[in-house]
Image 1 (cartoon, rainbow, N blue to C red):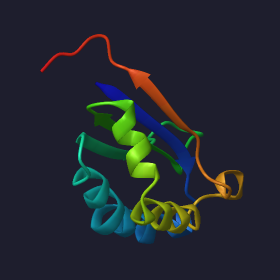
Image 2 (image 1 turned 90 degrees about the vertical axis):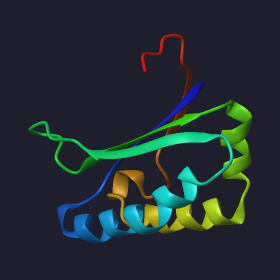
Image 3 (image 1 turned 180 degrees about the vertical axis):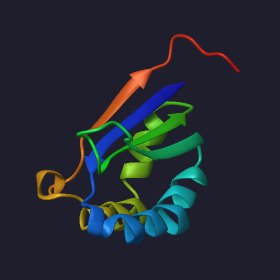
Image 4 (image 1 turned 135 degrees about the horizontal axis):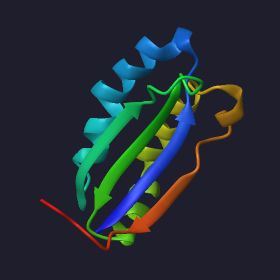
Length: 105
């Protein structure tokens, strides 16, 4: 399994609208894509990191992640989600992929 991890930050004044977009559009679209096993999007609760968000999704393969990124749906959603990010992430959030070597059900 491949874990896809995305890190970004959202200003406080955009949080509610951002969460609505994630829950109504982005997360369901990603979850329904072939090869996606799960997706979680979470806000950081640590002092000094307010507004930071992380996406963690599990995939059957790295090829599935690349196929998602090639779709018009994803490109449109990625363009929309960056409008919520702080200036630091206005060009997009880093996407890192990890090969899982231990798994517990």
